[in-house]
Length: 411
Image 1 (cartoon, rainbow, N blue to C red):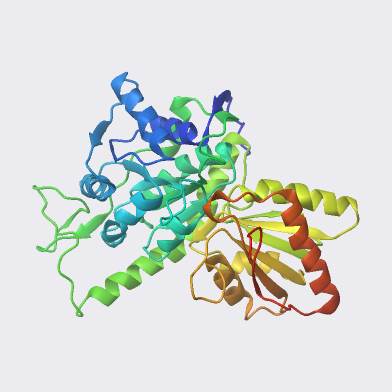
Image 2: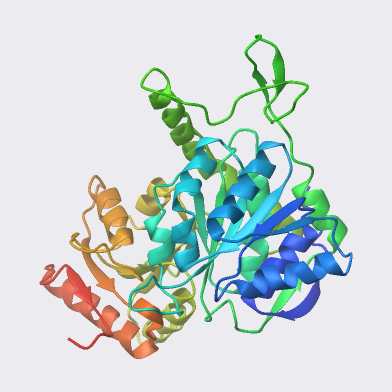
């Protein structure tokens, strides 16, 4: 039986405020944070909720982002729900603890406001900061707007804390384009969100005495997390993380669908969000807020009879290889758009994933990479039209002259 869609209130929220409001409703026990532009509003707003008594949360002001994630890891290890936020240099400073957190299977949720890495110093959007951490063992979800930001943060707690997953989860939103832009956001009542996220369930494990105990730090039932783990067991533990990441694909879809039943909002299948791809011959692939502009371009091209489409990747880790292959099976020419670059590599990180994924596909589309928007450089419709115009040429000639290109930059 189909559930009735819950009554929702429309609020004017920026992306940062949408994160804070979602965390406020998600019954979080510990928030540890250090401010960095452009995520500062998230933790500032949440600290106001704490000060006003609107939440029962321990808010820990720390001296660095490294300490913020360490505090969240330690709290999460005791079995409570934790959250933090960061971006750019702050995320880079967390690098060591990102690996420790995933290795300890601590389901911390973190919002990342994507900001370029120095030098030169830049406070605007690109995806270099989170792409650097794509192998850190965290689930990564990229959003398109403030509404999806709110929805995804709530879903992230369910995903991360699922006993079959137990992996920390990042929700990425574009600096300033989303973080500081006021939008109409539909929010659920507090009680419905709390019911949806539920109470964190702690799985049972065998301790050193062979007794089944909750997997958390507890003096009554001692266990060790993150011990010295040499060649005798390290490999097996890393394999367990990979197994959990693979299981996460189906779990993300399931939780996304459950949330959609409550709200009436869905973002593709939770992993990918295709747009007008059913009969598309050419298509672009992107992450984040750029998809909104690209959809407008697709609509304009469709009005002229061009069979154009768009694929927005919502989940980047785990990478939805099977879903990407299936949805692009009839597309003949593809432009992969990267808002970051791997210096010295053959193209950007999204290009690497997509090209590798489609290597074994039954059909072999022509693929071209466009690196764009570094440091917050605008990506207007005119430039996206250039990309689709190039795809039309590739469709005609069946040849990619230059597989990796930089667009919107002075050469």
